[in-house]
Image 1 (cartoon, rainbow, N blue to C red):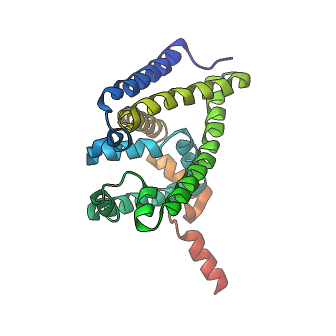
Image 2: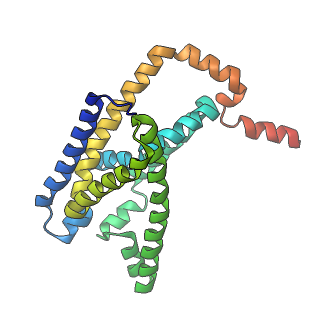
Image 3: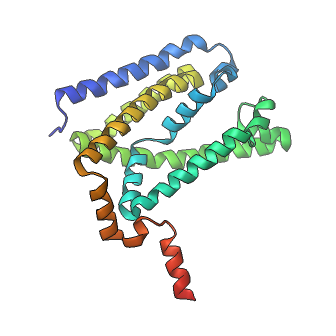
Length: 239
């Protein structure tokens, strides 16, 4: 039995149609190989950041971060803070990235060919494709289970649902290339940001910081506030 109301299905369907429309609309801006692969090298900092954020965040991200927060409490914020610091440092200094942009290469394997040989480029490309396939092979499985629980779709139809979603993404990516990805990723970023803020505020309003802190203190002791607590405890035991 479906857990979604007609309004929920309408919102989900409208979002998919808008995403597909934006992806197909981008085709008019693709005329050369550089347009297709690197959006004519015209991606700005803010658009690139939004695209990267939406690429790295998905259903599976929320799932494992929620589990991490459950197991580590407020110490889980350490991972996010470290990530922000590293991204800021790389962005400010242009470490590696600046040099790659100056070389005007479109893929990392292309750099390997310039630095080494064409054989190294082919090997790197094959390894990246194989590793990416293995990585992406896990995501649809986890997300399919999530959709089953959230929407109530019968498990018999989840495979077809995921196949349809993947075909939609493949269609606009194959047609519009990087320009399509930038447009659709930006839309996804707006939805993710709005949804994350709304859910976070709703949870804080329902529970409150004092109750959250008390629960972490009661169940996790010092580990919930100090990410190094376990390491310090082991060092004391060794000594």
